[in-house]
Length: 88
Image 1 (cartoon, rainbow, N blue to C red):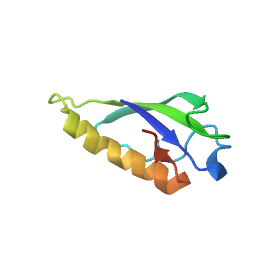
Image 2 (cartoon, helix red, strand yellow):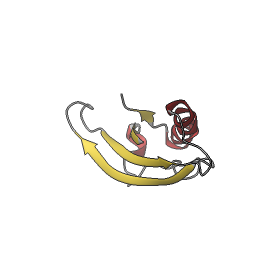
Image 3 (cartoon, helix red, strand yellow):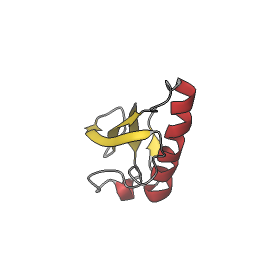
Image 4 (cartoon, helix red, strand yellow):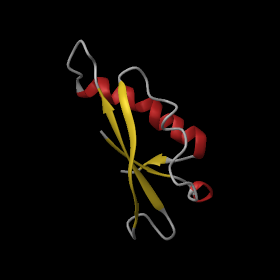
């Protein structure tokens, strides 16, 4: 699942948003930095980070609702660690 985060000005110097790797739960198989984006859609001087989160359960197929629930702690950790918000 792609995750697009926009950090506040003070955190934009980081190569990757802090917090994302610390939060995944047992269903999260991996967190990978994919890219960063800069453009007029974000506003002057802003950039967003794109992460790819992979989820898997060995014993069942995961529903969209289960994955949504699993993504929330990652977003919360990024918000807490550097003030990043979900782009969208």
